[in-house]
Each structure stands twice: as structure tokens, then as C-alpha cells.
Length: 236
Image: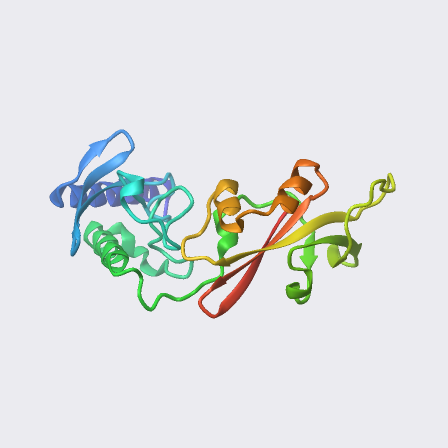
């Protein structure tokens, strides 16, 4: 495929998709294409945004009123709907507007019923920015560290291993240990998106608040559960 035919393909695919949206009652706005999505509980207006790499990347779909749609594990941190899994790119099916809108309708139908029989993926990490710290933090049974201070010490292969210990009043100037705390978020039905959400779930934990203010905690390990499954996320 030459560069000209490639560009023509991209332009045609985009135009074809947009024409499908127009037929479905959408109109172009500054943020993308806005239109109605009917479902069993009513009709929700959404905005469909085509990314620069469309059609090779799927459109972003988000409700016009973010807070009018319940937050859940099926929404991205920016409020967009989770519609396309990383392993669901075969055939670029989303280039057909009716196919995409069918997925959007199905998303709202599942949301209307509370995502019954939902698979409890433990992917809380995707709701926060990835740390610049490239070391791998290793831990064993976190139950023994719950609501306690911990120390992470450097180990082989660029890893940090957990053990008991709190930050001493004076630390060695060249010490590479990092001090942290282990807390329990409990059952997480809606993923927290900010530190304020985290503190609400932790409740009154004066010890942790004090340690953070004093900068004696550099790593926070949060245990959480979805159904019978338990996960953990490490903040550095």
C-alpha cells in the first residue's frame, strides 16, 4: 500500500464512520460527535471522539454528563466508557458506526442492571498514573503488615523487598531503603480515582495521616478486595 492509498483509506474510513453517526442522530461538536444512546433505563447523550490514530485505535466514548452515569470498574479514569479490550482489536470492528453504537448500548444495558455476573478483575492500578520508579516491589503475606509501618530494602535484579520496620529518627545519608505503610481499602465496588477517595475508604487513620504529613512514609501498600478475590496496589 502506497502512502497515497493509505491516506485515502484512512480518510474514507473516517468519513464512512462519521456518516454512520449522522444517520444515528449525532451531530458534530467541538469535542467530537454528540448524540443519543437509547437503553432500557432511558436515553443517555454521549460524545464520541476519534483519536488521531483512528481507525487503528478505537473511538473514545464518554457521557456528556459524567456524573449522570454511575462510576464503575467499566469506566476509565477520565470518565470514558471501557468498550474495547486490548485483545479485541481483530478486524477493527469499531470502524462501523452501528457496531460501535451497539457496544455502547450494551454497555449501558449492563450498567442499568448493576453489572451482574461481572468478572472481578484486579486492575486498580490503571486508575492512577504509573510511577517513575522502575523497581519491582516484592512482598509476601501482607496480613502480617496490615496497619503497620514497613521497610523496603534493595535486593537483586532491581527489586525492593518488604520487611517490618519504621523510619528511624535519623537515617544513613546514603541509605537506599524506603519506608512505607500497609492499609486495607476493604471491598471496592467503585474504584477510587483520587487520594480523597482513598482517605474516605480508609476512614479515620490518624497514624497514616500523621506519617504522610511528616514525610516518614514514601511507599503506601493498599490491599483491596473484589468479591472473593484480593489484590494490592503499591503507591510510590
